[in-house]
Amino acid sequence: MNKRQKSKNLASLSKTPTKELIEKIILKKEFSQLPEKDVEIAFSHFDKPQYLDEEKIKLTRDLLRKVFSVFTSKKLLKIKDKSEEFILKKHLSTKERYEFYDEIYKKLLYDFQGKINIIDLGAGVNGFSYDFFNKLNKKVNYLGVEAMGQLVEFMNYYFKKKKIKGEAVHMSLFELEEIKSLIKKQEHPKIIFLFKTLDSLEMLERNYSKKLLEAVTPLVKMVAISFATRSLVSKKRFVVKRNWILNFIKSNFDVLDDFEIGNERYIVFCKTI
Image (cartoon, rainbow, N blue to C red; front, side, top):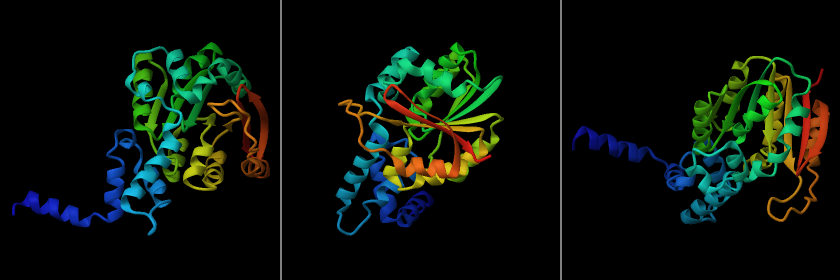
């Protein structure tokens, strides 16, 4: 047995059954560039004796698809040289926001002059909305944090091509210490966007949204979160009020604004002064 074969065999022996199943889960292309942390959390929901290995793989993929792929067109990941409007209208999350970007950014950034540093957590393809900052004469350094590696590559290609002061990084929002470190490295004033992201986090880990907001809000000037108010498909208004997170925000931070534009509700807040 040569050294390479011996090393390979030892590596194989060191793999746990869980590790092997997670590797099978991410063999599927749509999950291949997700952070391992997110896949592990999703898998933990089904890593139970009542499930066969095949069921664990299927159920984990189903959950990951709900969390990450619901807003993303597969065709979108194959397109590069299309206009910002085309991309934003192709991605379901930004499609319904597109005609309101001017109004939304005007409200969110009204009080800010000079350079603004925006950290967009769970960015999706929101980096393609950068030109709306220019239309409002806002000087923005944009940092998008996104778990889907394909979207990170997509945004960075766009930033480079357009020579925009923007960057996207591939990172799990569950890597809290890394997220905090990233935010601390940015210059002031800093704003956090969390658009249509908290619901997805809660699907993986209940109450993680509270933990995340507690950790990042003291590090920035302002946080803006949003929730969809209507179904993406049927357009029916949601009955759920999300009081669990709204009451938490009101109890722990200073609420600066609360408004609804299009099919999205925005809550703007900062650390208690």
